[in-house]
Length: 457
Image (cartoon, rainbow, N blue to C red; front, side, top):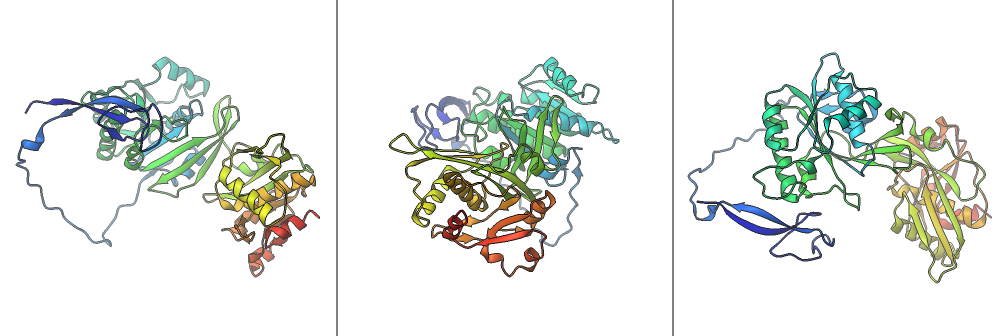
């Protein structure tokens, strides 16, 4: 039966399909993201299939399994985030803001892998830049002599035909939004094109057993552009975080079938590219000034790594009817909850105060263990009384004003002790923990918000 072209309207943010155009997507709530796309209908509804399928075979859970072959990138922070190295045949989606360093990191990784003794074949295929532009970046990074094979192409069929005849170990597609498949009758970057191109590339990667990196654009909300199914198709999803005007970059794993999630790698943007940061705590605290009100050090956990960061708060009388609440690097709703607890359970008057909160260094914190440090910084700024410069803080605050225990306290204190901190404010649930009491650091236990406020009296 002849093909019949159908018109449908697809949201480019979430992939929802509509029979006609509308300004707002009902699924994700975004405006002006619905575009017209053409699809080919083969008319199979009236055709009886002659393929009845084949019987599948089931196996026991305790069968013999092959060990996963991992490829070291030569970049320790990237290996850490990926779970100890790249797994052959895996597909990794890398997202991040424009100019954050995605292409730089992947070019450095390709060059490092290609320079290994076994001389694995690494292919870097760019759909956004010409070959000369990639070469200029490689020269700036000092990688121009690396045996990385470059190409500038956007046709998926050409790429697949070429890669099938190679012994590639690592392939980088920069970016998946620039690729197109002729059978998908829509513009490159559309939902159907991204889905179809990714499917063909992933199928080839699984067949040939090479590591496939897909660079993805992000929306203004910070999520990877295109259909959400793209993140389900790949094995690993990495997000590159950080402010473009700041030298620190955070590579965070939000999905990993071969390793832990929420693991982070810390990099510093330099003239020669991205440099690894072995001790991020020392780097985040390098510019910290002691004896300043509204500043304290939070001992956090990112994946399996303890990280110490400075939390800064500024409280000032508001000149408006409703006070301002500005947050950088933390959850705004979490700040509102902490302020409400301090008012309701601690008796502080914050309804007439503007509150500004900042996580120094560009790191984004999501764990509830930062509640206590945020509260201490706010009270310190409100009372204009600085905290000791050699003190770290961690603990979760409940709605009833209690301070709750958090995970891995010994690891947090060990990192603080290594950097020279002498005291710590922790939840009172750790009184019977012999490991903490034997640590060479002075512990101050707080059980509720009222005792927290009394600390400054």
